[in-house]
Length: 113
Image 1 (cartoon, one colour):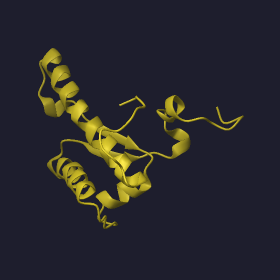
Image 2: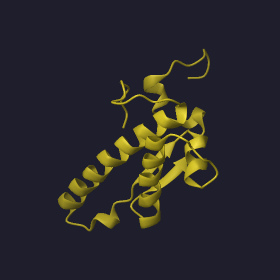
Image 3: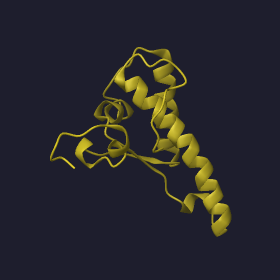
Image 4: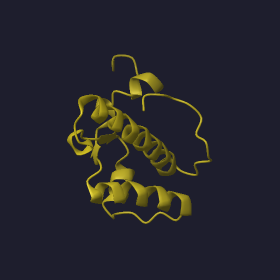
């Protein structure tokens, strides 16, 4: 999701904000995948979904390396992890310098264009 805006609920940490946005993006991507599959008359599984994130903590939690305390955050992480286990999507970490969406939402230092 290439937009910047206010989250629908309060995020108490950067990890929480990243997971909220990841869930919203994956929900939208599932719908878009269904439309693409319908247009192409192809099975949904033939359209791969990959969530690109520059949040190392999100990727670490999905690999079981973190233990978040927030209940809502645990639910979001469980939703993303379930989709990973079922093969609905993949999650890939991308360094912040390579994250294309940041160009739309963050200011850069001079010379880092």
